[in-house]
Image 1 (spheres, rainbow, N blue to C red):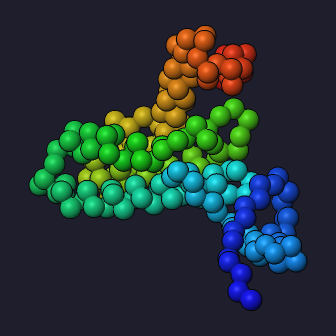
Image 2 (image 1 turned 90 degrees about the horizontal axis):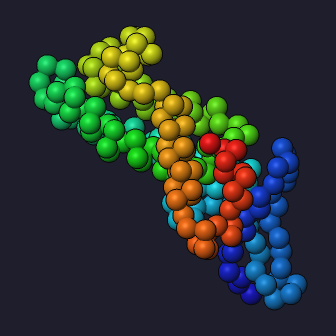
Image 3 (image 1 turned 30 degrees about the horizontal axis):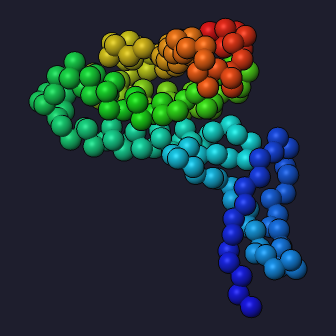
Length: 186
């Protein structure tokens, strides 16, 4: 008797919880196999909801996009630094920060995610300025005119929360939101 391979996903805060399969064949059901990562609508969920895989996926996508953009010229020929900066801000940053609201909020551990995003910004700064990899990172980012990623995230988060304040009081979303929490997150 062949059973379908079904998958199950379990969220937990436990550090080392076993991720065991569940056998439902005794009740004419399938064997449920645990997944380590669950993709839904472009979001990557892991069992602890820290979104490291989500950020890593989009950082990898951005780094490959940045490498492809390097074919548009080098430091002596090709695009001007202002054009490179514009390409970075319009093509790479939106991909890198896709649904950052999932993991960027007060009270979360986000150091690993921010570190991942800093990789993109450093490589983009090297590409924009045409400098060597041994150059100091913060100086190169300043010369390239890139806002530190944490400040950019805070700005976008503030804009995100401002949108909620403009929703009419009768809107259905307001029944799901606690106005006190929104004011405290700004």
